[in-house]
View 1 (cartoon, rainbow, N blue to C red):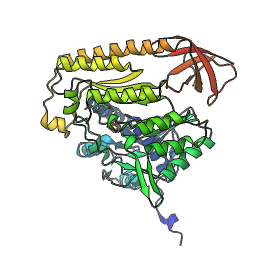
View 2: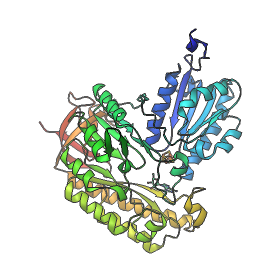
View 3: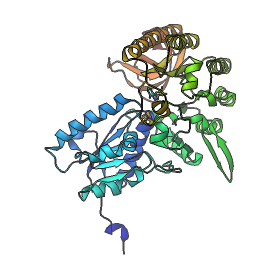
View 4: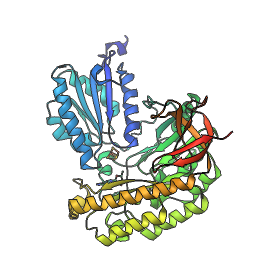
Length: 451
Ligand code: 5AD
Ligand code: SF4
């Protein structure tokens, strides 16, 4: 008897549409979700009008990320009036955090947390039968190790590879340990296979992803693999394959990793090292486990071992108890490091976190706004200064696609992850081109090919 034929077919050519909010991890997760559902017969579509199932992959890191999703659900509720067969699912961090509220909403048929994606076919079946498909069980082991993500990127040049999931750091402001659970690393052999398959398919850049990639660790009968070793192996797939990583915690940024980077030119010269604040007092309240001085020591190590490395960061304005002096310290840290780029946020209290339970959110909205504006203005200056220093230099650029502004131009990135726009010539996405920078704005470099 053929058991597989007796199973109800969930997909049957039904169209799946997925919308992704939040971080790069979520982008990677959406690709895993599409892979799991394709195996059940679903067909991916980029157009919501064609969809039979709509999934919203959500983020809980700040309140405004969640508000956007509530707004979107409201829209989808109206949209479904004309399409009663449509199923709507909420997956990811918000599903984990707000399962009860989501399950109560009439328009939500499926709720799946970040570790429950293998169960999605069953959850869809439950919804098909008129019930709700809900699974927000977190796992200590799930890494989706052997699932080949369906690449949803458009360029076919750069892809994400998730190497670990979850987070054990417990920064006091952060909801991630609650929504994504414990830290766990993925089998390095599956990571390598994925990198090799991507290279064979024409990809030229992979970004190894995790909430804290520096604490990647795998051990089995064959020995131990830590993050520097994993980087070395992935970068050895081909000298033509660029390797990036995100995100790293400053406390784990080891000299060994920097030395590995220095020894392999295809590991990109760009380190994202979230500082969050320049004030040691704030860092302690945030439970970041380093001081301003220690952070600057790591920056000095990067400058020493990788002199041409770009450094980018995340900053939070107006965390609990932040004084004007603490804020000044953040501005001075930014100047001292001279960040190439920063993601900058206002503190947003997240229910259930240590800060929400024990520390009053006492910096007023206006003060938060004023401080964030100051931080953004300073970063714009620093980005412009950094770009000006690049004018006249020659970089190897990996072409990603046509420039949005002009059909005769293309854009790509240098090792430092800066976007460079230049004349197309006969180049295509995936080519490496030597480009001399001729001018810049605070966001982009313009250049010309050097032969
Ligand atoms: N409020 C504001 N920003 C936050 N981040 C994380 N949690 C919060 C919060 N509660 C920021 C941090 C982190 C980035 C992913 O989001 O800067 O590095
Ligand atoms: Fe948002 Fe953090 Fe979840 Fe990513 S891990 S989706 S940033 S809450």
